[in-house]
Image (tube, one colour):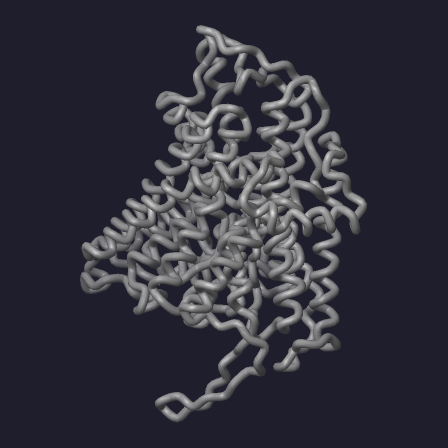
Length: 563
């Protein structure tokens, strides 16, 4: 690794740490209804939205009503994207005259963008019109990310309030998340990306001649507006099939760095927002440190694995599947960030990474997407592990487990276990089904362990609402479109509903003052315990499957056997 690449990594980590409290404090003011610098600019728009929708900003609901509103809204989003794809050939802004999408691909894509997964089993530039990309996908990038933030806000209120059944308003949380956080940041990033060369137009596809004299069609479109929110909202769906390795999406080293930073920016800042809103900034930093340790550990292992010398490849750097203009370090930093944050965008093919590096990407997902995780989703997923950690620690010392003064009882533990088991069920059961069925095996691009990893990664990505692909697997089939779509639904709502149930139950409890016997959840001991619980649960659940996939792949490669 060159010195300038090491400096880039350190700069990336320093900016992430430095921007966390700045953006976190701003979001705290937004979500608590306090004054902030965007209020004079967009406050009138917020009031207008409430007026035309009939929403009252001071009207709060129970967790059941909050959940109902969320599901109704998500279902409407699914229906809109589904219909847009089926009617695409009859709608405007379709310069390449693309036909309607098949029903099962439309189902998969609609579920994918509604659940903030953004898994794509199609090539965007040859499948979807400008209208579908904008009105369908880009719009869902905003609201699906805002939905994750809304769930986190409801959970925060459940933890911080006492003896109440009110968790706020889903519609207010959704509106403020889009209007004051996602939209301004997306506009700012879009302006910078356009300046770097990311395209934004409504031109018809252009024909050109290559240096060899071959004819080439260059797809155009409103790209930048989708790229900005796909990174900031931890969505990840690319306008082009090559995603963030495409020069029209990611043209320069600066655009690459800024898009990388955008992936982790909001999930990281939400740790500070959490701490401020529950009344303990130290709690927020504790969670950030746990996430940060897991992230840099995975990054370090990935870099070591990718730069390690191997006689099978003639001791050469592993450049297969990577953009020459980006190199190894940028590819590995991206693969680690995108899987840690449930973003799913890629600037290199994960299937071409070394087996150990590919396994880290897979581990980031199967650990529960809590290493920063999706916007909002990473934080509420981490709170699930905190509940289990506090419960286990309580058993160890013989005390009633508490978190921030709220007793952790049987109901919270049961809901936490359901939230962990739901995506795990999808990953293991659906992968097993695909591995023994002709429909599942027909899509493989590689044999043996590497092929199994393709299947395991696909269902992990779906259940973890990540959206990245291991590549090599043809997932645009009836079998995979349906099973992966179902996996995304279970992975999203199988976690959200238990989280909101926990929030509702905890909101009704009293807050007990800290005492000498209280178990501290804001120190180094707790950070170590929390990391251990995450790693142990992930290891116990997925070690057998990982052994059949990337571990075997790694051992075979060490023996000089490749596929």
